[in-house]
Every structure is written in structure tokens, then in C-alpha cells.
Image: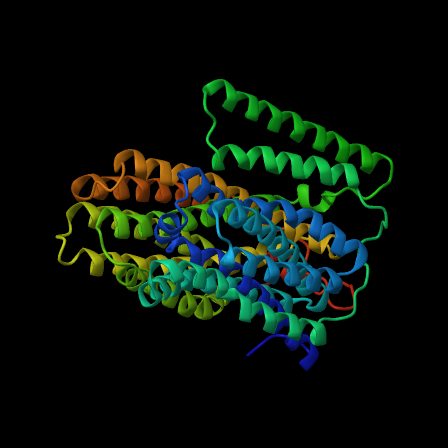
Length: 492
């Protein structure tokens, strides 16, 4: 049953869920088509890196500006504009004749997706209140997560059914009908635009510094520096921009102006630690999915359709466990996230052991079993964690709060995709197959388990900071919590 006090609120949630599914499906479905796309376009490794990771880069860059603009000027127009650009850029990418066209179209499409998703989070924060807000955010996260998990199986089926040349183009066109439907629904059902930020002046310098910091942090992981000196230079620029941004935000607060990053976000231990948990989990999940796809196709020489069959259990398990997670949340609260992360570690380590020890005849089936466990773990961790994080974003910074969370995840995705895939390729160079590929996948899986281990520690630390958090506001803007709620922590 959908949350919400009336039918109009539930219709808004359907639009938000459709937007999340459309934009994340578009990214996930392409991963499995990378080998055929590279061959069809005669693209270099650098071209492929920009086609795949450039979407996340532009997505991340657009989130915080999009959230801030939505808080200032209302969300509906920005949502519609972003979805329309997303649709046009997707069609351009699917019909492009060379790597340059595809890279440019994917960058534009990623920026449009970031603009749309920042409005989605803000809209949910605006429309839903109290426990209904938590359920709505959870359903949005579940829908987006399941769409991302379904991407590889769908992509594999398209490549296998249509062939290498038409298959990867169909993967890029898959989101087009979804975008058209979402546009039609949004035009009718999203609430009229209204300003939620208290200060009408846009923090332009803060936006520039935030985007510059994000860009300089992500680019070196997409285009590997040629030398150690160049890497140090990128790092120095990131640090300098981060310091300037922090000082600028403090200055705006002292002058009585609204900073880009609301003080309630940076001062909230649950928000900061929860965002860090989301970064580690999201980066580990995407990296593990990409390495598995490369391992099964290039390392083991199996078809795209069989690769899709291996990855499908993850999507199914995530959908089921996400639907059941809220029953578990009512029983054990935030420990649900910790349990999910622990299961994710077990799944990654089991995958490493299977890759090293399982006979080739049963290896695909065994890997599918580990994906079943991994999907279950993601369903328990993703949406409850996101809901708990966004409960700490004030109404006047709902868009920015959601944008920062998603931007952090995109940064983690760029870093982890680059680092974990490099670990695999170093241990299994080229189409080596056999023991080299198995060892590479096992090592990469252990790295992903380590990332989830870091998230597990952060999740345990966060629990100590949520017991005294004020209760959630009601739709009237007053405190909804009783004394018992204040004693026991956030309402789930």
C-alpha cells in the first residue's frame, strides 16, 4: 500500500518512482553492452571510460545545483525540463555514429538525470510528512535500486536477441518510452512549483566551488593521471577548493545569508555518517556489478544472455527483500541497515571463494547464488539507510539535502568503479581467462567486501548519534514525537 493521506499524494509518488527507475535503468543497462559497443564503434578504452563514467560525473555535478534551484524556484518546471533533455540526449546517444557524439550525449543525459533526481527527493520531502515520508523515500529508493539491478539482465537479453550492433543501441533507447510516460505523468500530477528556501538569493559562488570540487575529485578516477605528480596536483586542487568552499559557507552564515549546504546538514552526525554509509555501499555495489559482468563475459567467455541470467537473481532478491525490509525495520530499527551490510560482506566473500574453488561446470550457477544473497543484502540496506539520512534534512533544504546524498554516491561510484575495475584488470589483464580471471574477480570481490566493512563500522557509529535526535515534524510543522519517541530515537 502506498503512503500518503490522499490520492493526489500517491500519484506524485508514482511520478517520483517512475523518474528514479528511468534514470537509473538507463545507466545500469549499458554496462553489459560495453564490449559490443566498443567493437561496433571501434572506441578506445578511454572513450569507453568516458561513455560509462561520464554519465555519473555529469549526474553528480547537477545534483546540488539542481536541488538548490528547486528549493528556490520550485521543482515542477525543472523536473519537466530535465526529463525532456534526458529523453532527447538518450535518442542522440542511441543514434550516434561515433564515440565523440556518444560521450557528449551521455554527459548531457547524465546532467539532466541529476537535475530530475534532485527534484524528486525534494518533492517527496515537500509532499509527505512523518512516517509517510519515510515510506515514500523508501519506495523511491527501492524502485531505483531494482531498476538498477534489472539493467544488466535486460541489457544482456537485448544484446543476445538483437545482435551486437543493434543491441547496445537498443539498450540506450530502452529508457525513451519510460521517459515519455514519466513526462506525461509529471505534467499532470506534480504539484505546482513553489519556493521552499527561506532566502531567495542563490549562492552562486558556493555552487561554482561545489561543482569545481566535485569535478576535480571525479575526473582523475575517470581519466587516470599520467604520473604521480599529476595525481598530486589534482589532489591539491581538490583540497584547495574544499577549503574555499567551507570558508565561503561559514562567511555566508555569519552574514545571515542561506549557505548552499544548510548548517543543519553538516552539524547532524546521523546525516553525515549515513551519507558515508551510502557512499561505501553504493560504490561497492556498482563496482561489484561491473566486475562481475566483465568477468563472466571476458574472463569466462560466456554469452551476454548467460551473463544476464547470472545477474538476474540480484534484482529479484533486492525487490523482495526491499518489500519486506520495512517489517524488519519496525522490529529492530536502524539495525536493519547493519544486518544488510553484514550480509553484503558475506555475499562478496562467498563470491570470491566461489570464483577460486568452484568447477567451471557449476561456476555460473554458483555465482548466481551469490548474487541472490547480494541482492537480499542491498534490499535491506539501501532504502532504510536513505530514509534515515533524509529524515535529518530540514524542509527548507530538502532538495539540497537529497542532492548532496546522491552526489556523494556518484563520487563514490566514480572512485570505486575505477579502483575496483583496475584491481581486476591488473590481476586478469586482457582476455586472459582461466585462473588469472578467477583470481582477479576474487581480489576485486574482497575489495568490495572491505568497502562494505567500512560502511558497517560507520553504521554502528551512527546509531550512537540517533538516540537523541528530535522527533520528525508533522505536516503542520509541529513536533510529532512524544517523550517516548525522543527517548528511543527516530521513528521508522
